Length: 540
Ligand code: NAD
Image (tube, rainbow, N blue to C red; front, side, top):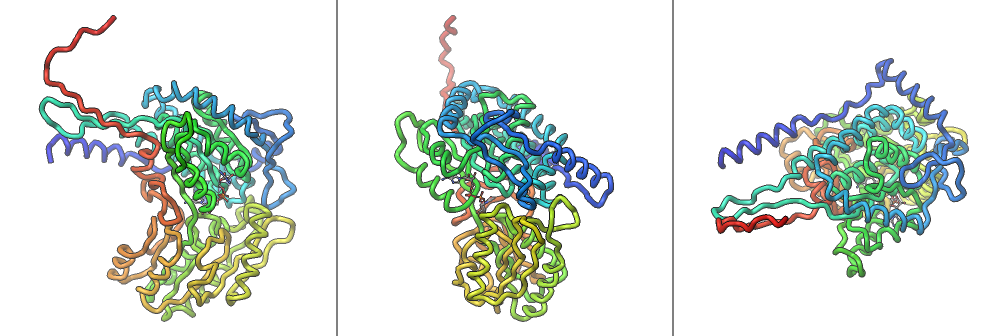
């Protein structure tokens, strides 16, 4: 390895080591609790506003709106956005297609600097952004704070990553020829996001599009339009050009296919269910239409059916904590959430008893009150679907635990733990996306790993074990995008845990990792003969 190469690597390493994740709030401190209480009060005083399309400015009235409600108290309206029509989507596409002509030529340094400013804006609005999430999607304080911090990390990390990718790099040193590889924006990006990380995922996909020089249409999930509006307001506040982005809330089934199929779109960055993701991949693969620049790039991060193995020699105190947190954090509505707990037969009875006790210790109620670790599920549709799943599962599996739900009309569902004896069971194989866990016994590690790998998804997974050889076997054989050993299986951190799965869980490169931005770029190689023959003078 040449000295030059060594120097480059250490420079890159130095740059990467400077990256610091945004620290999570410490709500055991009075001062931090006060900040959150103040933010909750401020945000509450702003309930009921309506936000417009494009830059999400407040509008005085509108007829066709998406109304966002507090899932803990559905009569409480958080706010509304205009619901985009197909005509609005067409206008949005016109604006960002035109805007792309200048944005793609804007120096990377300017785009990077705007991203850093956006991170600073997020930091200065941190508690408010988290408070919106507590009210709009029912996140506990800690979960909402983690979501905001991840959004900040995405901005800072992708800014650094773009810095790394911005300059052309030499591919090989040969006499007489300059060979370089350089990255160029693709054009117009469409971001379609889920409600469960309403800030971080929406922001992550949007800023990755922008910093790489693509203009972007930002479509939040219907359930979390107000948080989406806050992101759009942030983009405007820090000075992103108003033809570089367009906030387009709307009903997914109505405007989604239109924007996905439009020939002006070059990239679709989607995170959500496998059903919708697969339909997008399918439609993007069709033969290009007139006016389309090429094959559309689809980045699709989809569902999971995540398992945790508890080995016979596991540290059970640690494993109980990790399993409970992974299963019930944000009511199990994380793509990374634990939904299959696999326990070695030698410790099965004792461990499952403790797991049930730990689950029953969690309190469910209004997430604005920090006394409660668990809140409601996202909406009535999810509530009905999960309750129906529980009823169906009861016809085949033994219920080990079913919690009570708070009184009132909030969208609460009971934490439910089933004992599963059949790996072909429908709910052992399919995502439920709620606080419903299946526990299954296994007798050898081989069998445990086989159970992990038996599902169509491959997102997160984990093992608690104190056996080095078992840990090595798990590393080699567990088919998951993110494997966690002797720790909880949720809570991926930007740069430290690049996140994403394979099989039906996704076809993207990991978010928050070094390959992510490449998906938004076109690589071009230039090979220039530089043997001196003399150049013609520049034309005036
Ligand atoms: P969803 O698929 O219902 O919706 C996601 C987005 O797609 C929303 O904005 C929605 O409006 C839009 N949409 C709906 N129909 C569409 C269509 N026909 N064309 C285009 N867009 C359309 O998912 P959700 O309920 O919002 O989110 C939960 C799902 O997301 C779960 O399956 C979860 O596992 C997955 N998820 C995955 C990851 C990951 O990183 N792999 C992260 C978070 C969530």
